[in-house]
Image 1: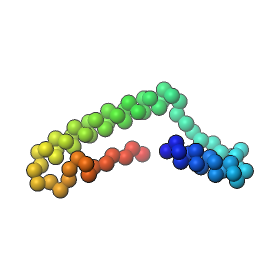
Image 2: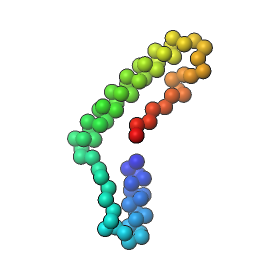
Image 3: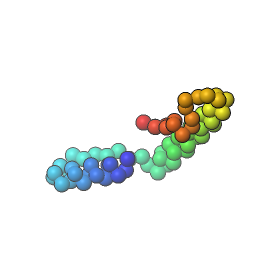
Length: 71
């Protein structure tokens, strides 16, 4: 995400449209709060997924097939 913002910023600067570029970034405290909440959600999901997979013997899914994306 940060890399894509950096790349976009460089492209826009090269087109001389720098003055219209506005990127909203979280403060350090907001960022840490978001990371902690997201980490807790992932841990809860991992526990739920692992217990579900363990209970289902002939399942088509396993924990390595499940990916979590936060939008």
